[in-house]
Length: 205
Image (cartoon, rainbow, N blue to C red; front, side):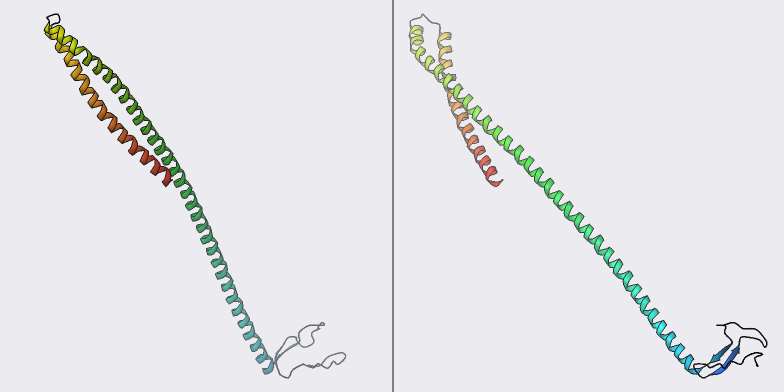
């Protein structure tokens, strides 16, 4: 190839053989245009080395990308676990609160029931005492009348039926007094037991 104008000396930075000619004979060229392709063993070796470096860096980049994805996944998993644990703790706290409220309600109800039973037992004792007093008065009155009625019966002034009626009234009053005394003792025993249960419940709360 011979230039038609000024001769320009071309130097390549590395030694090598011409691998390809990129221009035709007589063709005008511009600045920066590729004219020849040289084939150099040194350049090829460096190119291969750079390609290997590039591949290594690409592999490293891929590994870092995989590691990044793994870390992101692990972080998301940990966040989900933390959220699940937080929800579980909240559920446990709510359950404990509900249990406490249920216990308070049951305790209040039990306390009211025990107090009602105590008042009922006291009322039963009071009623039995009133009945006992009335029957005592009735018995005393009947016992006072029996001698008079017996004398009147013996003198023929009072009928036998009337005398037996007064005598029977005294016997019934005596039985009622005995029964009422037993009821009072039973009511007092129930009251003592219920008061003990109430005190035990209060101390356990």
